[in-house]
Length: 435
Image 1 (cartoon, helix red, strand yellow):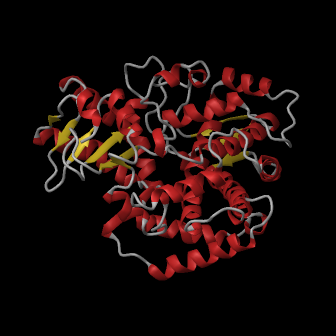
Image 2 (cartoon, helix red, strand yellow):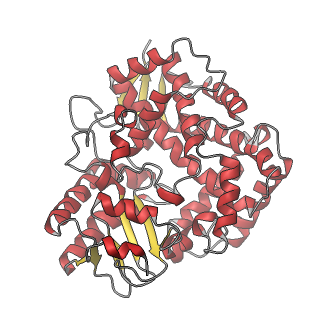
């Protein structure tokens, strides 16, 4: 039995009505938007109707009604608990992989469509070696990866083609972002291999349906063969070269997940650019920080990293963090699913900065004091690519804000004078270049 029992209060049990409201106002909109691959039409609808605002209000009421205790949902045939306090978020995420495993039945069903041996859904016996391999290659904890110099050059070259016209939209940005992602992970020879990432996209769309969609074995094998071909080339200056020098453990499956994560990183980067375009004080601060900086060389760019982190706080790219208990705990029997709905904690109405752009909280210690602010998750299962993502995103942003001025051309109002929207549709955002 885990020692956390000594520090826990008993969960409360939701009513049938409360369970239905959580299902309809929290789970259903999130699933409809696509948890593995976003569906643009569903995200657009969520942005118009501000689904996350309603979800945050509901969970705030449930927290107050149930004194912040975990809430056991009435799900037939399943044991499902909803975390409602920052202390519980900290406890659950710190408890990976035992007794709170990141490998849940839902994730195994979804991610096995394209990475059946990925570390995130690995069994306890396989996880340590796969996690070590992932950390060896991605180098979390180092603000600058050992290949930061060639990555910085690749970012400079890909950013030079943006915005491409008077208006920068998501489709244009996304093409450049994927070119960069393929270069960073696989090398320059993979830059234009759109077939590879198109295959991954189709598999991820299937993964949205988890066990409700049959697996396309042939497509997955074709994707893995193509990916393995790039990995075998081990092009210098790419992660593939680091992989070749490492003890690879199911390398293709781990790399498939990294490419998957780069998609979310692109969304966060574009949203950050939209925030800077609409917040003059933060934009000028970012531009001032770049004075005299040689972007052809690696830089940590602390303020732009903070801007990115706050964009992910405002609009989490992983809205649901799931854990599954490996033994009986006060959350329930072994196999209990624990649900952390990150928009609730990131937009908690009790936070003075809940609905505003506040990058300084990542620099002045306030974010570190709140264990429920988890843009890259937390604990032993924290995203191993967090530092690499922040480097690529902040360096891309540096080129764009230094060389161009943008203002919003479409999408919701993002203003320092009013609460920011709870849900932001990146697919239909447009930024106009200002001369």
